Image (cartoon, rainbow, N blue to C red; front, side, top):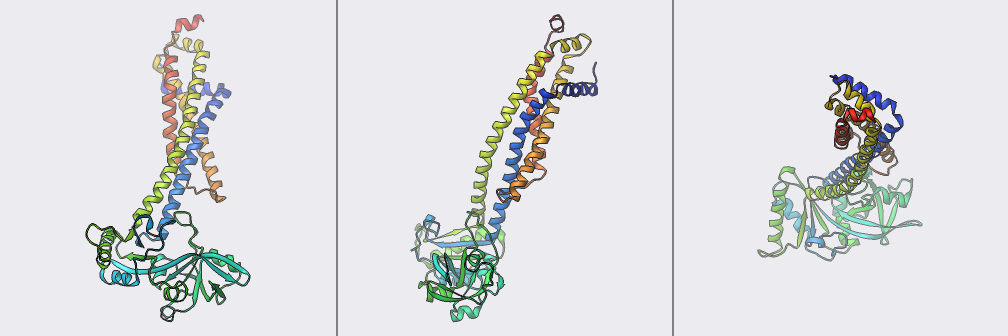
Length: 406
């Protein structure tokens, strides 16, 4: 009778005595686990990055846009809808419970902006003083729009980081004069850097001006492109959205059953949309990694079958001197498991290294934690058992007399 320790020693000795064969098996599992690790690290990093971008929009903020469905100010949507007004914004702030702040907004894309010989086309936002708090978009340099600026319709502005670099480079823009649609504006400050949005747009490629200035001196419009509402209690944000919908339907004179002439986007919808995109990409990459692991398992099984064929005499001798079928099965499975775990460990380390390099280079987001190692152990064990059990059973079923005769 062979003890488990002795069986393990014999399995390791067999591996050490057939380095080339087992190196090929390790390489097969290494490729699959390395691919899987890259997928896990990138998917975790992407999810974390997406949720960070979503949180930058404000998980306590509701976005109200004119029109319904795609017409709600979405890319390619109808910008001519004029169903929201400043009176709507004031009514929401005054009448709806759980509302902390309301920020009415006008905006136009592709506005021509010039400073000396430099010229850009960017998005200009007309905002109120509340916008900085609601959107977390305060001034990193200089000062934000004040109540006095709103009252006087002052021609002042703040630049996003991208707009600032395009117009001024490394120079200090505060106090300088730029021209937006040939209207002179004094740069009052620079907005805090926000980076890309959840949809990939540059949130720093923008200029903000007082809403009163935008509506009276630049855009010549009274309707709003959006109203951003900040809730006091995030847990009641769905109820707040329902109250706002009811108020706006009443104000707009919409009959029961009529379609809303506005849309309300909740933070959860944005998070779900971003998470869904990340999940689709992860599923695709996981399928590719799964194919690599399947191929690795088939390689291991084939090499083990070749090994069993070559070791018939050895196995027959062991059976003749008292080794039981289960001892042979255990040894073969231990050999498979050892090789799979060795390949898995190397694959995890290589995969983490690759994703770390990609992250540092800014090519892909990456997050390396305990998950790749745990998944590696589980997958390697599953591969060793699933693809090693048939060669192990075949080895155990060898007739010792026939094996010795051969």
